[in-house]
Image 1 (cartoon, rainbow, N blue to C red):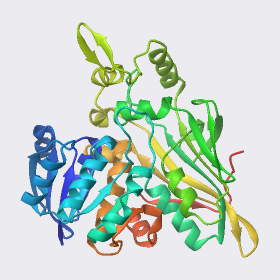
Image 2 (image 1 turned 90 degrees about the vertical axis):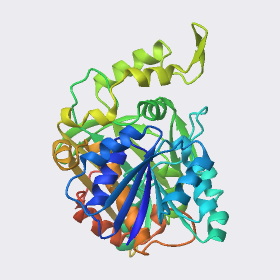
Image 3 (image 1 turned 90 degrees about the horizontal axis):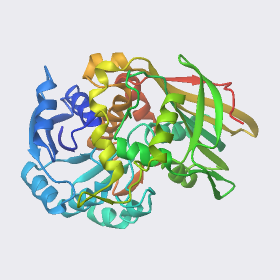
Length: 399
C-alpha cells in the first residue's frame, strides 16, 4: 500500500519497525534513518520473516536539507518521526518542501528551553492545508492513545466530559540503581519541570512532584502517583467538549526520586552549559551519556505498565464516570519485538497512526492532534496489534 520513512533509531523506532513489518500489506517498504546508520542496520537485522523491504540511511535530522534529500531519494508516502522532539520542526519543514505526510509521538520543544507546547507546530496548520498534506501530532501513548481514549469516551459515553485524569503507571523493574525508561534527557527535563494542570479555563502551576496521591491500579496494585505537566493536556483542553479540569499523573519509586534529588542537588540535571577543562558541556547531556541506554533495558525489565484515562461527565443529563486503560507486560513485549513496554506502548500507536493515514481513514490536509479524528478504527487496531484496552464503568476517582 505504501512506503514509510522512519527517522530515529532508539527503542521506540525498533518497535515501530517491527510492527510495520507485521503489516507488510500496508507498509510495503521502509527506510530507517538516523544520525548513526549502524543503529538502523542493527534494527533491520533484528527483523525476521517479513515481506516488507527494509533499507537504511544516514541522516542528520537537525538539517532540513538532508531530510529533504533523503525524502527525494526514497519517495515515501509518510514520514514517521521518532527522533528527538527538538527535531520536529526541521522534519515538518522537510515534509512541507516535499509534499509528504508527517507523524510524530511528542511535541516540539527547544533544546535550550525546558518547555514543551503545541504553539510551534500548530502554527504550521495553514501551510500543511495549502500543501494538501497531513501532520498527525502525538501518536504515541501519552500523548496519543490517551487522546484516542478521550475521543472514544466523548463519542460513545458522554454528552460532555468535565474532568479527565490521565494516569501513567510503570511497575517495571530493570534492576539498575537508576535509569530512565526513555531518552534520559527528555525524561529528566519533563520530571524536574514544574507541574501544571487545567482548571476552569486556567492553567495552575505546582512545584515539581509536590502533588502526590495513591491509586490502586489493575494488575499492579496501589502506587504513588505524582502530578506532572504533559502535552496532551493542552490539546485536550481545546478539543474535548465541556472540559473543566484535566490532570496528568505518573508513578515513581522512592528509589528513583531519591537518586533524582541527589542529581539535582549536585547540578547534573541542569541544561545550562558549563566549562569543563576548557570545553563547554551540558550537565544533563553528560548524565545521559553515563546512564544506561533505554533501548538496552528490554532483556532486564520485568513487571507491567498500566496507562489510562479516568473520565467524569454527563450523559442525557445524568452524571457518569468511565475509565479506559491498557496493561502491558514488559517481558511479553521483549519476547515479541526485543523492547520493553515503555518503547512498545509508544511504538505501536505510532505505527497505527501511520496506518490510519496510509489507509486514508485519517487523511486530511492540515495539522491535527490525534483526538480530532474518529477514534473507532484506531481503538480496533489497538486490540489487534498488542495493546488491548479494558473498561471500568465505576472507577475510583482521584480527589
